[in-house]
Image (cartoon, rainbow, N blue to C red):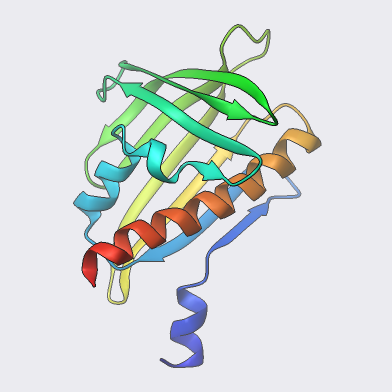
Length: 160
């Protein structure tokens, strides 16, 4: 593999200093359809994790524009519950939804996944916007990085 190809397969997760949005990107050796399924089914529980920090144990979703989703697990040793609504469902290219802790008196954040077939695989680019403060943004950035590593492990194992 060339240096350029290696860089294209790196998982990145950063916080945009101008907007505060978390942005993450990775290339997967799979199909857009397979990646979309991983993002939009109970399979989320298999990869949406950060060992020792949070563990998603439940996920449900009515994957259609206006449909609701919910997730629950343990984070920082405490139970958590998240909820939201799908705002864009364009299978297998784009998925977007709102994101909010259940009962929190805050505006929901938005999460957008863009899936693009490329010559070297399928690129997933996500943007998590509207997070309430720097601490939450940094924890979310780190969480997306570890979650995408786990997702890559899962889909890569299927190709072996």
